[in-house]
Amino acid sequence: MHRTVICPGSFDPVTNGHIDIITRASMMFDDVIVGVFDNSEKHPAFSIEERIDFLNRTVGDIPNVRVIACDGLLAQCAKDMAATAVVRGLRAVSDFEYEFQMALINRKLNPELDTVFLASDSSYTYLSSSAVKNVASHGGDISNFVPAVIHDEVFNRINRKGNK
Ligand code: PNS
Image (cartoon, rainbow, N blue to C red):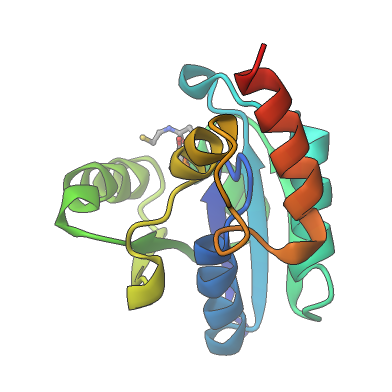
């Protein structure tokens, strides 16, 4: 059986933690769709095109990974892409309640859709896109948090915003 999964997220911006999860998913499943959502509650710092570009430059060379823009419901997007599971990283117990609720709602909306949680690598349990933006906005070093190929663009954009 050919297994396609979806790794959804805001990826604003993609972090080394996201890359770890996407890479590990690509080793477990036949095809991995990285679905980039516009989460209206989060007021993204980067446009969806920029976020997709960042992802393409970091995971785009993994042969079974494809990055796409998604809107609307994840459950529907997964169905449209013939994905049978959602893959999400779990960093800490604090992630669990939100992630569990999302998994159950998605399964109600699309009963064929499972959610697979991958435990974050211990070196990334503290990492989030929000933390990256916060550190960069204060001029802090984010080189351990985001891939080198996007570092300067992320840092310069956020730092300029933070210093306005
Ligand atoms: O990286 P994020 O912001 O934690 O990702 C959250 C995301 C995009 C996966 C989530 O907000 C989502 O699934 N959005 C699509 C809308 C949806 O399906 N809502 C119902 C499930 S709660």
